[in-house]
Length: 171
Image (tube, rainbow, N blue to C red):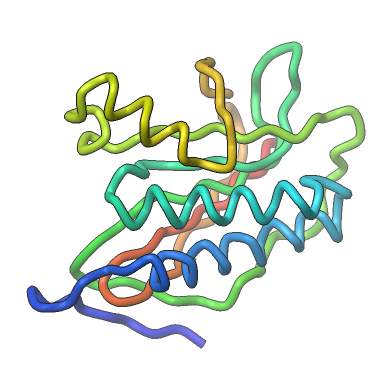
């Protein structure tokens, strides 16, 4: 089931809307857990709430979840969610991953980037936002996506905002 939505100027994106989108991301992460044993179920709830809060306030740019080679900091399998608002948005069913990938020896990892709106906040405001989130993140370098395949065209949205998703699998 796929639908397109256009946001009107009079509508507002609420925490309920954001939690709907976060719940769709959580459904994808539960499928990862079922296929690969990570992330843990309690962490999935925290990831979903993090997405919801940042998306509601316009502070999310991208968030990645997947499995990487820690020695080279490269993705083997990655789900990337990019915040989107307005225009044509897609609300797809969760799942639709490529065939299972051999991830033996790869560790689960998540990497988040904040939006330009977040970076316009003062440093104390940024700290305040981060302190309210259920996930405590550290500064790091984004893993690379070298040779591989990326599948796009999937997304989750409600009331004019949401996320687009791509799936990357390394060769």
